[in-house]
Amino acid sequence: METKIWKDGAGKLWTHDHRRLLAFKLARKCMPYQMASKGEVDNQMWKMSTKNGGTSIRLKMEDGQSMTVE
Image (cartoon, rainbow, N blue to C red; front, side, top):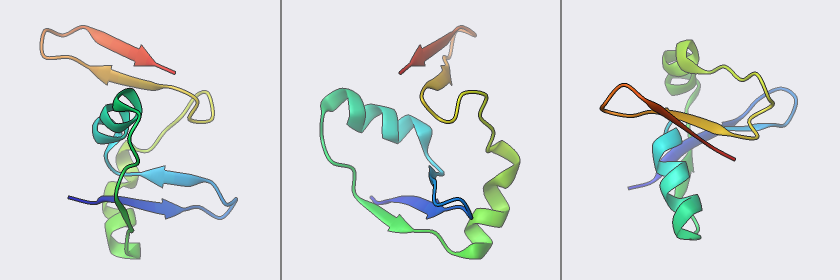
């Protein structure tokens, strides 16, 4: 399954699936991807935020705790 990505106006890449990105990063594997359509991007913008320019990913775990990976 390919992860949807897009490039913003500043040329920065974003992904819809941070968990999958993290899994591939931890496995040191290349992640298959496909460019997202404008509609797909617009649908997902509510969850796109960053306080550090995307240098880390914070995942919420099932038990209510969170994990940050850089």
